[in-house]
Image 1 (cartoon, one colour):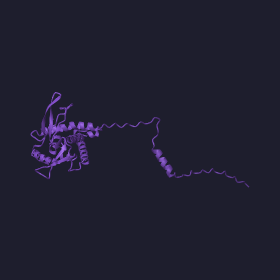
Image 2: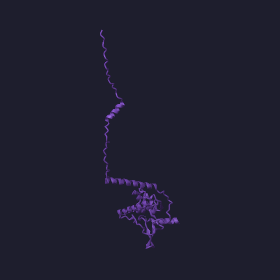
Image 3: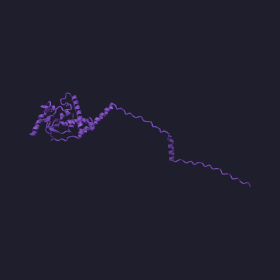
Image 4: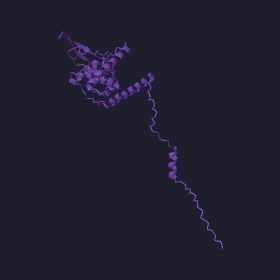
Length: 255
């Protein structure tokens, strides 16, 4: 009996098990595929050309200046509102005060009636309109007000100047404005030309006020001594008729 020959076992070939990669690995593999190979030398980024600012036109500059002037004007009006004087019918100027009527104040210093409301004034009787008395202001107060006004309208209050320097520069601007007004209205008898700005006063003495608020004695100098005096009257031609009424009121007050 023949013996059966056992067959040698055949090698079993295992098929690789295919696994679906996880979502995270697919994302990593996708990002790896998109990435560019890193070279040995760093890649320099292209420089963006520097942008040159455009030069504004004259029209744009004028518009900007007008907006700036409007802002300064608004700040000046805000100052006026914050410094309005509370009316006092019993207010009296100290004796010897150099005063000026409200109309002369506007004609001499280029200020408006509403702006004068920031200053104290004395009421004088008006024989032609009893309900509208004449207002008498201290002349120096009106001058300082005009200096401050034109300084602020020019934006000088933004420069951190001292009060004295602000008013000094404002006086130059105020006198230039008053001179322009006189040149624009050469036939006007009401406008008063500004006094010239000099480094030294033209007279060693300030005018001495007399009884009438707009009348004072101006000393006449010859060399270094006074040789006499001259009576100066500054009043509005339309208000000259009120002088007699003022003297009547003054007589009644002191009698």
